[in-house]
Image 1 (cartoon, one colour):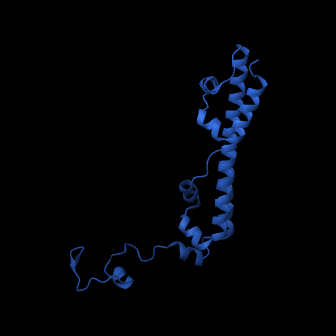
Image 2 (tube, one colour):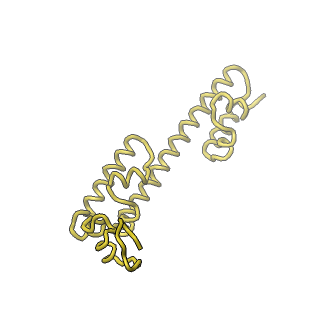
Image 3 (cartoon, helix red, strand yellow):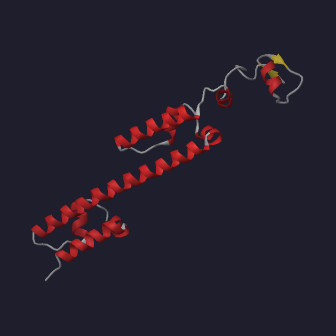
Length: 164
């Protein structure tokens, strides 16, 4: 086998040969496990950094994305799962809570748009049908039908302005 212009008599992949023959650029390069052993990755400090990032995302009302979170933590999800499983569990809970908060916000905004559309339609003397409300509010018909809270609000509004 030839590597970097040198001839080697064997091709097995043991770590000693990799270091000896230059297959690894820097044998002293620290990995995450060595950092934990040496105390560079502290569970409490990692939790504090995660809390800071997550609270910032919550304040900005943005989604908590793994790629940016773990980049901010200067580690990987796999490393956190292996070394700090309770932290990973907490992070996943926070992500689910933030997703639920964002979904609720979207739902509330759509309910408000539907209410405004129904008021506008009835002020013009028309009956609020799905088609009219969808056209004015911009909320998809399928969304109104499939989301129970939104559907209940829409049906309640329709009952108020039932044709006579």
